[in-house]
Amino acid sequence: MEKNRLCVADLHVHTNRSLCSPKTTTVADYIPYCEGEGIKTIGISNHIYKPRVLGVEYPENINHALSVREEIDAIKSETDVKILLGCEVETFHSQEVGVSIADARAFDYVLLAASHIFNWKHEYEGFDLSSPEAVKKILIENFVRACEIEYDVPVGICHPLYPIMCPFESDVVDSFSDEELEACFSLAAKRRRSIEIHACLCRTGTLLDDEGISPSYVHFLEVAKKCGCIFHFGADIHVPSHFSGSHEKLEIAARRVGITEDDLWELAK
Ligand SMILES: [Zn+2]
Ligand SMILES: [Zn+2]
Image 1 (spheres, rainbow, N blue to C red):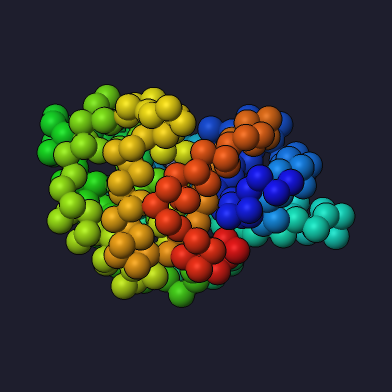
Image 2: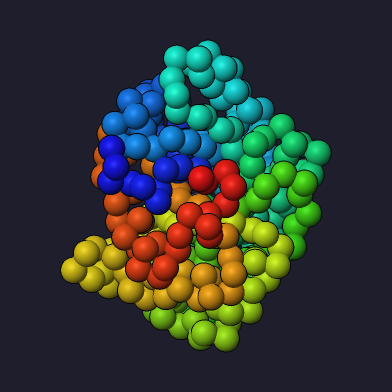
């Protein structure tokens, strides 16, 4: 129970309202895992895309994400786990942002996904993704955009600057200079965008150390901490049985760079 003392909230969890999660995954399924692992707050953040974006024909829209509210209301009196309703909003490339300022008010918070390379395979032709430098340039542009978009609900940035599913993830991560990271994370700090301590810290696309963590990506957190960012944990779990043990490595990484409770997003405490 005490093993996740810094990580007491996970704000990036998917249910069956996301197509990438099994049809059987419900909010209630996660509650026993939260109770068993000392997670006091869980945030359901299913995907939202604007309709008619090429390659996204399925119903991952605002109504779909909001329909989880009924599920939360039905079980909230049965558990001490606080259940928040968030959403993971697509902001990658120049596509229209998935949720407007007004619509976002229906959620407790918004996570902006500014590095979903895999979701836009149909759109790739217009972008240069041929080299680590080119991918990095797009990631930075979208990170800056995610900092600048206006919302009046709390906003986090999920898997920040990480090139998810890029064929050369490691080369992209290693291509960032400290100056580039500082420029991004200083802006995020100024705009109060919570930086996600995400499961990409443990992805095998980058070299992992003895504790199963990517030192290259830990460095991103180190710079973010130096720039005064706030943080939240997001294991990006899609299947309840994957919940077990998912937060330990994230907590190790956070402690390694000196993140304390004082550095956490209000929602993540
Ligand atoms: Zn994502
Ligand atoms: Zn996600």
